Length: 383
Image (cartoon, rainbow, N blue to C red):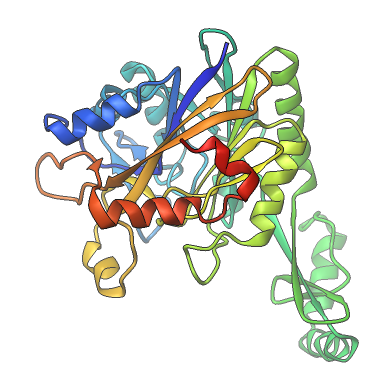
């Protein structure tokens, strides 16, 4: 029996939404699916906690999560850069508030086993196992470990290739500064136990190559953990969705980096049936691989930023996005995909409005952007 799934852009929410309008009702109707989920980019406020950063905090009330559930969401993903804004107490409070609201929360937990485990939402036939991972960059303290709360990592590492002459110059610079000797001394006493690259320049791994180039790869242990989890979920009879969140953006936020698409394709090759990305607060084109949908970024579903004027002045398109409803066959292949362009509710005093459908030229532009990356052979999936 097919499984219907509704997904949205990131939910950066502080307080409860006003969902009383006709537009909000239409969004709620669109999200009616066997499984509806999105990325919660916030942590729930709680007594006895303190900020873990000096910059932007995104703190939500329990009532905010209740209004998300009212829109029809079944689950939220939480591996992102704001899940740890209040440290372990915030992680615990967010899980408690999600449970009280009737929401399942994936990607964060009291330890790495909890954070890496999927949440499973049952459907009429197949169930959906939802994994949530963060690509970074984040401080290591934000990532869960065997004895520390945090979020589930899939850390991406960049290696820069340079021609031999430039490589020799960089090696001389590192040697002259003494960085190589300092690093070796730290490693010798176990202070830094990580495997060291041949050449590290100001925190970046550098190798000799034919031309200047950047090569991205996932941390081996993080990837092994995720792939094993996907395999276990598929063996248990579930379909598998992977939510990825990261801040290694292209200079043009509307463009998905090639390495990120390659990562999404590799996760599908390893068993994932759907990839939902978040991070850049703007819409990015949808793609397909082996009949599975790759949704690298839908922008924002809720965006309670404290600096809306900055985005407006810079012309960053944070107030338009989309929700998507997909139908997956029993084998995980996408049978069809429907898109609803949205106007994101701007932050406002009191109870801000939830998102509403976009119309006219704005809606057409969002559709065109979303479908611009879909190959001709996959366009049959779009009604």
